[in-house]
Image (cartoon, rainbow, N blue to C red):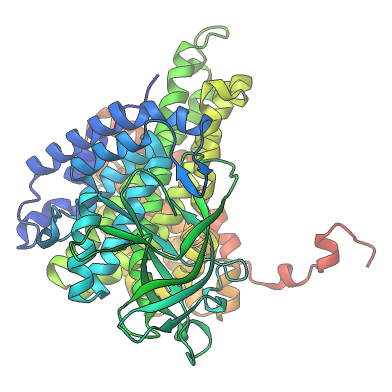
Length: 565
């Protein structure tokens, strides 16, 4: 079975589950009508399933390769990327002044999900370019915007972000890449960066790198980091790729998955760059790009989960072991639970994107706080679901899932990275219980009030489901207050299970909204979620409140397996 874009499922969530319809009543997104959304989803879905998906297996089996210093893409990727670019899909949410569509992020994230399900390795290219576009729109000078944005939005050029170094991963402030003013308005950037996704390719005419580096005399740590635009080819007076810059691809990483996506070790050797934003304010600019990417990665997890689930269902229908295995209770449990979690993760991601859009359209501080609170949840839960469902897909296939030719294992190998990049899910969880609860829990409590109001409204139509959700939300409220009363190290020890519990309660909320608005299928799926996913929140919260004593009470030697000490 080939991938089928879930346009109807996404359209239902936008129409009935998240407040996407409110966007069309704002001046900024007046054109984002239901008809526009349906048309966008339909066209993007066709591209995903007809152009990108057929290349997914080939990209895995014939990876990108480094040849005489130049990265050669997997067969068909260049042509498929050209179709993405010519369709305007890189610039879905970009500024119309520079050639973008100016549509909501909610639609952009829906498109990203479908493209990720079709071909994650290829989708990474436009996703990173979109993040760079957003960073430039918010922080670059007018000259840099005019020079780079039209080319990036059109897909003629692609963008990357360069943060990580051999000695500076999550601790970005430890980076050693340096930049020195050249005296002509440009800078000379030198250093090595690793794990640079699509750091070079032959699918676009130029690759534009946003590079974090430190200026002479800059403060230590993240306070002394600046951001630079460093293109592969320096634009000439006509704005076209000119002379080659002083940078190169040292090597490509040999990865577990996403083989069609070249992950590069980059070397900058006095390369010409331009400052983006202010000196020593590079992290603020880079966080703009990273925040866009965090939600995008969450939707990547949802996309791969959808594709893996489709393949698992098709196999379960066709595979006979005393009848089609889709009738076996345990197989049915796996498939139903997976479908319920995919719906929940998709709804959380689209709700987050809609909050981002409402903030941009209205400047409402509550919407900004809502978007900020939902972002780490959408990233972590979306990718966790992606991994769980892809793993389930292998299990449903049985021994054939462990054989590469079925394609089930590729989804698990590809999606495994998503819980690691753009900030590990542990970092997302620490952000949630740290920065995102620093308002005294106001944003969290507003969300829980919404969940409780929804449960109250559903009591008449779905009393059992509403009661289960109400109890879970009240338990989560109590746990949130308990966390607020604790010091940060204790919060961090329970951060991951707390985030997971919050995601499950939100998932129950969106399932209940779907049950209220949809037919028997949505009501049945909501029942599965309430019975088989939501109850885990209690165990999550028990762990979230377990404290630090058990973790500090076990020695490093015991962790290594030596219990003699």
